[in-house]
Image 1: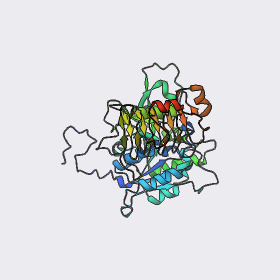
Image 2 (image 1 turned 90 degrees about the horizontal axis):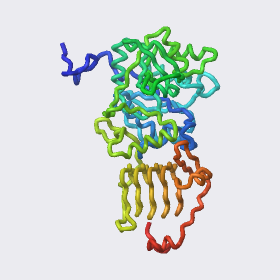
Image 3 (image 1 turned 30 degrees about the horizontal axis):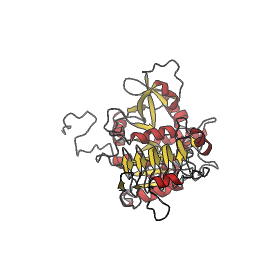
Image 4 (image 1 turned 60 degrees about the vertical axis):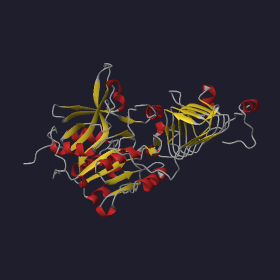
Length: 445
């Protein structure tokens, strides 16, 4: 008889002991990364939402992919659709970390119109149209994930729970305030965690401020045969929206064993961290949290490495230490290849290869890769999109009327600057330059 590790729950196995029922190599991952990402527009004007940078060098999709690799799941299909070129390049460059010789892969599945002439009509239809690729792999279980959430989760724990419960379907859940129910699929369970009710984005009238509900995280583990039958039935159903939350799960409750797995957070913080950074304000707030002394989401845990593709770039550099021209950053995330030259950066996230020239001030902002900030610029409470040139003397986040005329501004007042915006007109007064001992000829950055 094999003893469990001291203090381990009944479903945990002793270190080094393999559960013969739990062959993770027989699990196929379907990562849905094809949404249009309208709520993150204009950051999604030229790229899919999972390809948007978050936390400096990372893309949003990296967090789910890191979860897969850390969970020992190495057969991954990424289903794409809208504006996928940037995402495709990122996956090709950064996620060739698996062994094809061992049957492992991270592979892009673009729309192929195998079952009709339409593009993907919903999350369930996206998987149904790729049944051919799924069935070729002959998995025993299929794990459906979303590519646009930020969290840390060991999917092997969920698989073990699924097997212990002898479930047909298991969905991951997390407690959320009842007042936010309209954003989620709300789950009702019995004392054994079997799902007895599922409502997609219900309006819970009269909910108290401290009431909570179980929300679906959009993470579904299926027995492969159950998934195939459910998708084929849904494809033939008249009036279906072909969505897992709206159609597949409610139908399965009537005939299958569906269980709810409570999210176990690998982030090692008091509060569980799972973010759908689907709006610009949510994206901005989550990014600003990373700059704190003790951020809610830990990027620095060596026991749960977060992988990504990073271009070859030198270390970040801060230059000039003059009294009125000091290059420095505080409470900020600064990526490789950045140069802060005689300027102040505070409470901000700088993605790779950002250049901030002298006498500028960057406060509570996100600068995407390749941004160039000219001298004497002032930027606060803003998101600057990739490769944007902020001209000399520009002011962003200081004049709401002017910001709204030139750029997108969120409900929370975040200014979003893209290369397609109206050009800046922000001349710098020559007397201001002379006062700082600067001339146009021979001046440094």
